[in-house]
Length: 124
Image 1 (cartoon, rainbow, N blue to C red):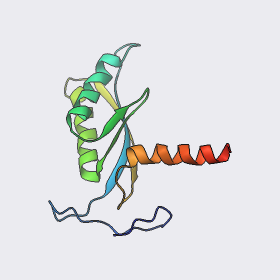
Image 2: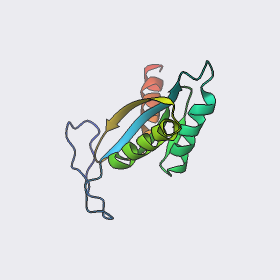
Image 3: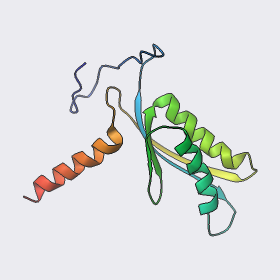
């Protein structure tokens, strides 16, 4: 399978383990509890723990935890992270932004690398 970064449409790979299409997804996930005061870090950390324990590639920054994996797995972990707080009775906010790009993998690191490459060429 040839992957073309500039193509509008890609061939969709099939996951040999499941026989289903593999829809690679990079997601920015933010989960927080509402009405708990000015410091939400103790609640956010519970949600991040769920994401980290999922085994999906991930990285946490100041506002989101970025995750990469098959669409179904990413949706599942986002829901589980939100449930971690909601099942304790907290009003819970889930923000989810996804880039679903069949045929691509490793985009959690490749996308920032590509931007850095473009910016370094502009500075020359």
